[in-house]
Image (cartoon, rainbow, N blue to C red; front, side, top):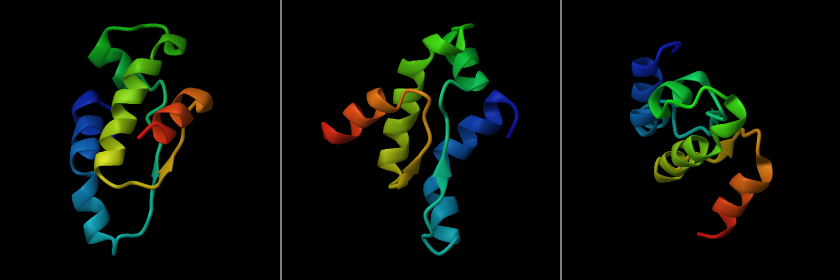
Length: 82
């Protein structure tokens, strides 16, 4: 997906995608992506960490095991504070 709607649909439907793929783990890499900037209005990718965190929280809800992020320390704090 290369547009905002496509990316948001993938995030919302990740659980269904996973169920249809035999529950295989897959990589979720929303880190600082353009769609986050469009949703939040943040033009500087380095300032999109809060949007990345929000997307990662959705990935946790969808039981995705593999995440890719630019700010590894911040995402690690999120994951270990649960």
